[in-house]
Image (cartoon, rainbow, N blue to C red; front, side, top):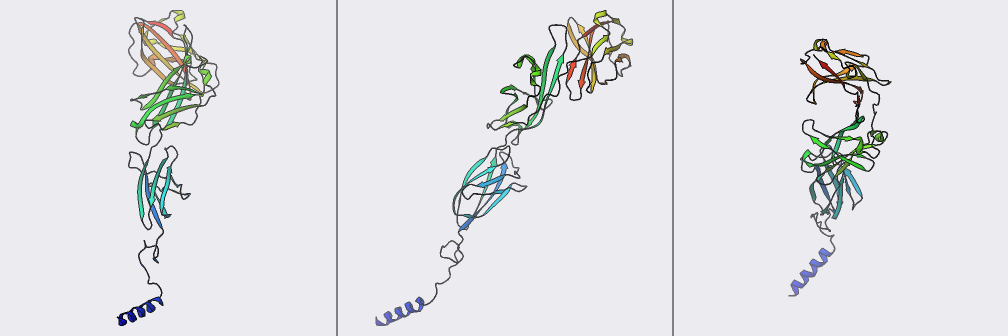
Length: 330
């Protein structure tokens, strides 16, 4: 018994005089290799897609630091203190994504987060129209066209509007043109006039099924064409009767200073119903007459009643159409 007591005391003295033994466990707070931080690696993608989002900002709200995703959508936070951290991923035209991650000492966490993109307008246009007529009065309207996409896929689109002031006019999707379109007449505007739009910032407002909304950059009406060309021959005022093989058109030019071209439309009238049988577009503004019989592949015109119109079209695509001029082909 005395022997064991002496040995125990000896060992106590021996090890009491020696430094603590090194510890190698990095998770042991007393270890020389102890790691007090962790890391977060992540990928930001378009929701419901596999494409990474480049240039998205990921903000560690808890630690008040941020990083930006690379060209593939990846990001890394190193040396993140252990604990639960709140992150916010953001990119222009996308809905912010907020998420929390618990960081553990010496460990790395990986996450994949999807951002819902708001719709995006890639093209927008408004064109003014004036249709002159004898009765009841000239008709005015505008044609609006917009190309709208969605990062999450076209099926995500819910609705598209044309916006001016606080007013919204719905646009409908055209399968043939793959654009959203609307025609709005003057009586749909507060002043019963399309001139009310001149100078006003116009926008395309779009929304997806997740209520992400995009408002386009403003665009504007370029011109309302008031002065159109006037048909001279053949003329309903003179009850003109002509032959198909010698038909030609003459008109008075508009009194304008901007660049423009002409468009001619010829329609046959049967039982009060008009059907367009021939059109000519892009005719130079220097012309004041055109011979129908010289037109290549011209249609055969049977005897009967016809009307023709001539339109002034500016470089933007706005147009003003003349009154109809009726005549008879014998």
